[in-house]
Amino acid sequence: MRILLLRHGKSDWEAPYDGDHDRPLAPRGQSAAAAIGRFLSEAGRAPDRILSSTARRARDTVVIAAQSGRWAAPIVTTDALYGAGAGEALAAARRHMASEQERVGCLLLAGHEPTFSELTGRLIGRGRIGFPTAAVASIRFAGEDWDRVDFGAGELEFLVKPKILGRYLPEQ
Image 1: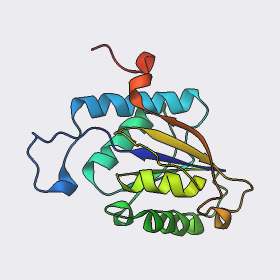
Image 2: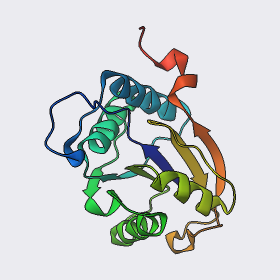
Image 3: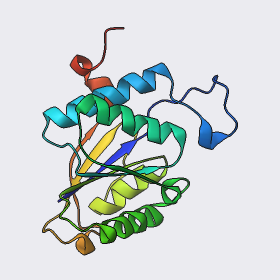
Image 4: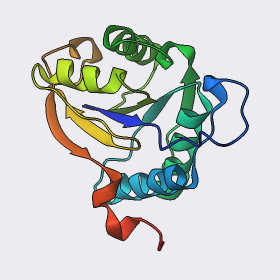
């Protein structure tokens, strides 16, 4: 089983919005989200379930990625991923998986920095991870029991930054 960590795309600081939680994606963030969605589908890594931060930029990133990648996974939003630390994000994922009635092989979390850098490093048990906007990390865990997903138990399969996905990005 695996966890995909998808950081929200580049946000638009110039757009009108009421607060940080409501900040929208910039056009570059939208393009990157679409590219990541297509990449994950072609790589055979489309998620079975999605748990997203309630922040607009995270929700929009995962919706765009899902549409572009043609994912069938349901999207659930939670405040627990907005402003969370690594431990809180892992706890939110565990709570979500405990509520699932069917087998889920791949859970995608959509959220923020610095949480995802810390969470990735702690799940794989080592290293400092740079996590730019719209990047996605795939972390694999042995077995099929989500209770075994813990810090130090994962193996980093890949960390993909949208910049390297030239063929997936629209013409500029």
